[in-house]
Length: 170
Picture 1: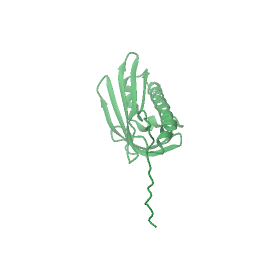
Picture 2 (picture 1 turned 90 degrees about the horizontal axis):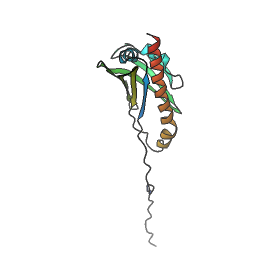
Picture 3 (picture 1 turned 180 degrees about the vertical axis):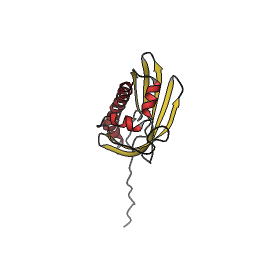
């Protein structure tokens, strides 16, 4: 008896899911100057305690702890994502009316968070951007449904906390 070979076909769904951008972007008007924000964003021992504990469960400044090259060990907690990373300040560019600060989070699950602070009437406009590659299937839906919304909320809270701390130190 001759038996024909059988094949198992795994196919993608007929319509693929299209996801929005995975990037985390928040922007807000604040009552402090770009220079005041710059001083805070590169002073890791000073900014760490101001960040919301439900977003940042760990913030341990390293050596050096201030300026370009400053380091910290951080753990971000968004939904069931707990990402522990080494952070370093890799850019602190004061262009007068515009300041750019980059926090580089090292490792294969790392990312760069960019703070752009631009002079505006009554203070500044702060834009906080974290470009993210979404996790692979089967975690993609969880990222977009649970992690990203919390992370979006946390970045808004980061801006408010940083601006509040900068204003308090005047």
